[in-house]
Image 1: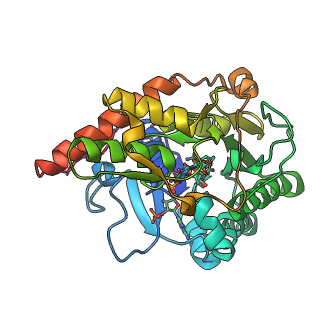
Image 2 (image 1 turned 90 degrees about the horizontal axis):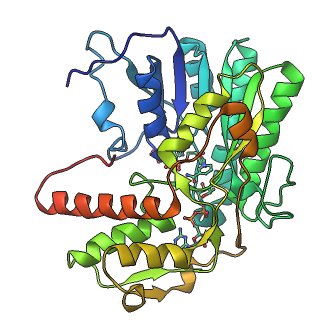
Image 3 (image 1 turned 45 degrees about the vertical axis):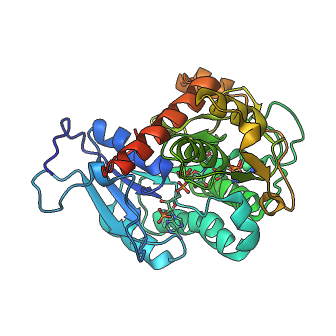
Length: 345
Ligand code: NAP
Ligand code: F7E
């Protein structure tokens, strides 16, 4: 399909994790700003680009703005080659094994990809003496067993999972390369952010997708773990704007990105089932397999620094996020049953 984009702005961005939730929204944002975008994908036995198929361009088109390139966070040589050949002005490191529960099952792999993957990119930038701005996708999971509430950029970390530990490593190595070598490297400490493109095994999407299946007679029960955990849930489309803003500042820095509100999984369930006119108690059962060896009980972020310095503020409130996710899953199931595929907005 032929696609037209706004005038080029002469900037090249490399996005790892482009096939993920955030990568797809960030790619849309960068393309709309006139960037040439290189998206790193890993080889898979089945297609793994459904979130970006709607912006994919045939590499033979004139004026190609989005190119997909192969690489892997575990393969330093591939990352180095990409940095060397593309010579990006900005790198957004979003690639990760990002599932907290799964990180207990594959801790070594998670550390390799989510932790060391960041170091490999920083080393490639340093070795190639590239004048490039770097964004690291840091996470509120680093606060884990929180030592203060709300969490700010100054709150000490206390990670509670192999994923959280890997993100703490990536956070500090990003700070270290900024301080040691003067790299323009930033950490965005993003609290949970969701959307219709959220992976199907994260709790919000698992719930909204199940509701659409239940309403359409495709599923009877929804099995969940801990309903009491509280999260600060925002809308992913808005959070990628904060990533971009961090790399446009005069100086590199670290920022919390959050809504400042916290809600339990139970509250999400209630709101989502109510929006579909259902009582969640009739459908939900607890399966202890979804419990984690160590849980993060409560997260709530203070994003005042991002507001003050980046001019960034969240717009979508909790109830609206719940509704937009339920509505999108309802529509997706409807389209699926009608034999039509569609990308979530
Ligand atoms: P996601 O949907 O799980 O996407 C992760 C991306 O990383 C996918 O494109 C995935 O590729 C890619 N990836 C996984 N393993 C890789 C490997 N070995 N080599 C190269 N790429 C690999 O995650 P997300 O929600 O968009 O989050 C983006 C980033 O922000 C992640 O680093 C995550 O840890 C972090 N983060 C997320 C949140 C949140 O609430 N969403 C909050 C804070 C931080 P496939 O598509 O092939 O699997
Ligand atoms: O769990 C509870 C679970 O997997 C949220 C990632 O993007 O955000 C995400 O990590 C809560 C936890 O997200 C189920 O125990 C109950 O307390 O949706 P989640 P997460 O662990 O907060 C952070 C910021 C990241 O950086 C991560 O990459 O929900 N929960 N029942 C469940 N969770 C799941 N997945 N499945 C359940 O059935």
